[in-house]
Image 1 (cartoon, rainbow, N blue to C red):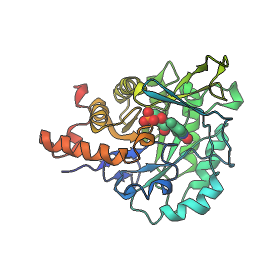
Image 2: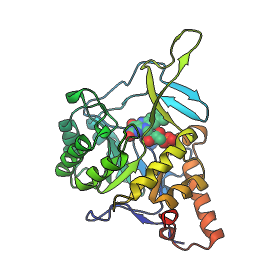
Image 3: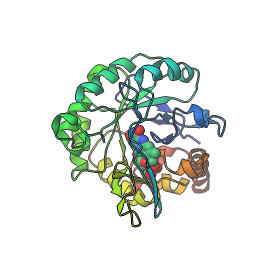
Image 4: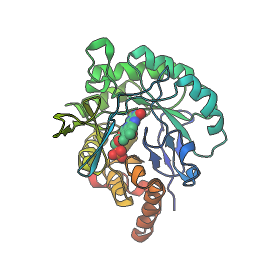
Length: 307
Ligand SMILES: Cc1cc2nc3c(=O)[nH]c(=O)nc-3n(C[C@H](O)[C@H](O)[C@H](O)COP(=O)(O)O)c2cc1C
């Protein structure tokens, strides 16, 4: 049975995963935290927490609230910063079989370009995932990924600053997901991942105040799966690039839905908080499905629901 997928076919030498199951940024730390709990080397790829130029403490507490079938988080970009990542994490990753993709985040286009430059050529880093769900401080704080022009500007800047494969991760918080996807593809992205968390909030009726310290946060988990699936389906219909599906994936059958919608690979996020083994359970369930259905190659399933 062939589970391997090439997620950067336009790139030389590309980014070949042994299987399509990845972890989603911000839900699996730097990988090291989970290595006592599961065999992380069996994963298709690990995407690490969003990384910024300087270390960040993230947003004020409280930063998590459970919702019906979902999780609201306003962690923000709490991370160790790119220099510590290169010094402390990349040397560990360089000895791993599983590819590690670094998720990057900035406040300006030049932040993204500088991050890409710093990470270029660092042993242990197999690719970049560009988080364009960040507010653009130079133009009124709208998310970079909210419109095609700013999404394309970030993509072009990152691509010209690195020789690594570049995945661009789309935000669902836009009225033009296909316009953004096409713009990012034209700007040179090697793959598109989607979706990031959906903007949401909760209010504490007793205190009469927003529950999260940051007021709004990102909704993730099973509650957003149908939204993510529809966006993956739409985006896979307008770009030639590999699409990586993410949003509420908890079981193998969730993952198969995304693959049938056109995803070449999937990311498991919030499910990990309930079950740290979730990504490998998802992988095993994909294999069982393929066996049961007599599918020899995962490629036979990609985008089938579109025909
Ligand atoms: C606690 C938490 C932290 C996250 N941090 C990041 C991040 O740093 N960068 C990013 O691109 N996405 C981040 N995300 C979004 C996830 O990677 C994913 O896109 C989203 O949660 C939807 O997938 P899920 O429903 O499987 O969690 C975070 C999500 C959660 C729940």
